[in-house]
Amino acid sequence: MQHLMEMDLSAVADIRSERIGWRFKGLPSSTFGSTIGEVADQRLDLFADEFVGPLVVLDADALTHNLTTMAKWCANHGVQLAPHGKTTMAPQLFQRQIEHGVWGITAANASQLRVYRAFGVSRILLANQLLDPGALRWLVAELDHDPRFEFSCWADSEAGVALMSETLQELQPSRPVDVLVELGAPGGRTGARDLETALAVARAVDQSPVLRLAGASGYEGALAHDASESSQSIVDRYLTDLRTLVLRMADAGMLDELDSVIVTAGGSAYFDQVAATLTQPWPIPVNPVLRSGAYITHDDGFYRGISPFSRIDGVEPFRSALRAWAQVTSRPQRDLALLTIGKRDASFDEGLPEPQLVRRRDGAVAPLTQAQVSAMNDQHAFLQLGAEATVRVGDWVGLGLSHPCTVFDKWQLIPVVEGTTVVDLIRTYF
Image (cartoon, rainbow, N blue to C red; front, side, top):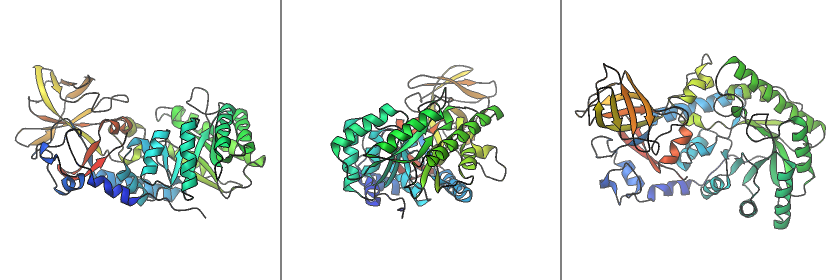
């Protein structure tokens, strides 16, 4: 019987005991020496209590909405969710995802694995091959120490399988390491480029005395980058191939000993198509797993434009839970203002920040129109202004952010807010 997803709640609670100091940017100096929990409980105000810009904050209501919406959708569509934890690297948010029924957490590398295990995450998918001998040694120790720890990693080459097997045979693990064959596609990222190569990898895993073939994996998001019909057709063809791979492995008898076969794909852009394909009837017991990670915060850019919930009738879209606040530090030209936020503070790889609000020095807040961020330096954003835009030196500008995966890594401690009141602080571990 498969265990429910768990983590060490006492380790998560201990985060609140860490003391705040100068290394946490944006926090008021009056909080230095206090614990994260003490400051979270003070319900400070972003603008009245001397937070210093730039700041990135999380909206409490939007977080709850996104968690609830995704959990309900997955339950209604018969799929499990193992969200990519690399989006936030925040155990406090992992806990909330577990409370909303996630099946596991996905990692991308060995360092992330160690963070997850430090907080007792009990079921992890590693969406890469694990080849490093030091990482494999650590993994074996974790598996031997904790019989409830469930782990699977990818394999997309016979060479990778041979390297894993060689190291593991020297280590003599108490149980085999579960492996999912990764199917890719020409022009994609990792993954075997065709079915025959993937089947050869599956045979290599099946024949290894220290590995167990547990299913198949893939990532459709590397093959398409918009919501057009042609992109969706590319994704559908790929998912059909993934399904065919699993059926051919089953026909070859390679999956006979499994109670349930893991079949996993699904980033944050096409998970509706993944669910539709992976929940079609199977002749074998299959556990379909999505790995969407960005849903928890969504965004005001890339995912807003491509999320399935932006094009599915009857489903309320995710809400962006991310906002940055930066001051206007210079107005050197009529059509230009400089903000105290840059590439070290906000994402810029999938779209520049979106000006949304202006907050005056007297506390009045208004929509900011006829304004656009045109470029970013390390610590400055160039705000191009139309004739009607009224922005003054000293004003605060509220910005929507795109691509949450490259926001969280820039902040060790992020306030969670209701309006402008801080109700929690989220610690990240990058």
